[in-house]
Structure formats: C-alpha cells, structure tokens
Amino acid sequence: MARITVEDSSLVVPNCFELVLVAAQRVRQILAGSEIVVPRDGDKNTVIALREIAEGKLHIPEIYDQIIKGKQLFAEADDLDEDIIDVMESESNAGWIGIESADGPSFADALENELLGGSDDEIDSSPEIEDILAGALEDDQEESLS
Image 1 (cartoon, one colour):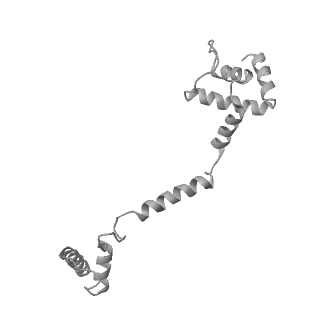
Image 2: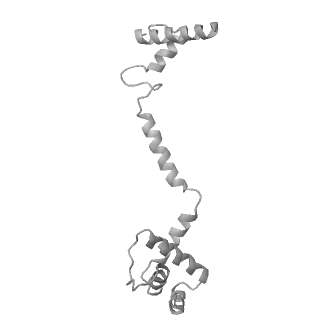
Image 3: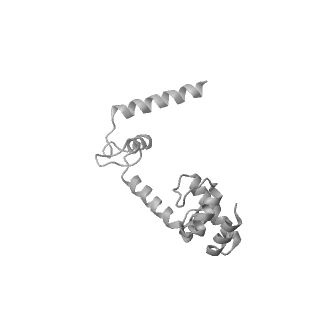
C-alpha cells in the first residue's frame, strides 16, 4: 500500500481510526459487488478504497451510517411498530379456527358450546362435530381402562 494513498486519504478523513473504519467498510462493499469508481490498475481492494476516499468519490456520511447500522444489535422502534401493526391487521382479517367468520360461528366456538353443554339454539351442532366428540370420548375411555 502506497504511503501517498494513505496521506491523501487522511486529508479527507483526518482521524486515522475513522479512516480505517471507512476504508474497511468500502472494501466490504467492493467485495459484495459494489461498483468501483476509480480505475483498478491492478490494485488490491484496500488500495482502491483508499484511492476512492482520497479522490472524494465516496459519500463519507453514508458510509458512516452503514457502519453504525452494521454494529447495531437492535432494530429501531419505528420499524418494529410498523411490523406489529401489519401483523395485527392480518390477524384481524384471518379466518382460522377460533375466530368467528362472516358466515357464522367457527368450529372452535361450536366445539366449545358442545363441551360446555350450551343450548342448541345459540350454535347449530353438526353431525361432524358430534362424531369428533364421540371419538374423543371413546379414546379417553379406552386410555382410562388401560
């Protein structure tokens, strides 16, 4: 690595520790497939990153943001709130067991009514539910006898 490249880069990013962080982040970007904005000239990625910094071809604050986001352990609260709201909206529109649908009571409601001995006026009992309950009772009786 040429000393001139490091000296030129230190004029753009005066703190040597920050320069190392920015150059390392730029090398990661290059390795990930980011476009190189200076001629390669047979140089390694570290020299290319320093030349890009020295020539002012990079947006340094954007690279700082990428470094910070890469080191964060937790997502920002705003992103989580939007995800939670999306999940809540999808749950309210769901038609799975236990949620009453627009066309009548759900299977879980009918089963609960049957188990609690509710009146047949509230929820119509279907033969399918009675068969399931009878089978479950028989299984319980067989297990208790064993």
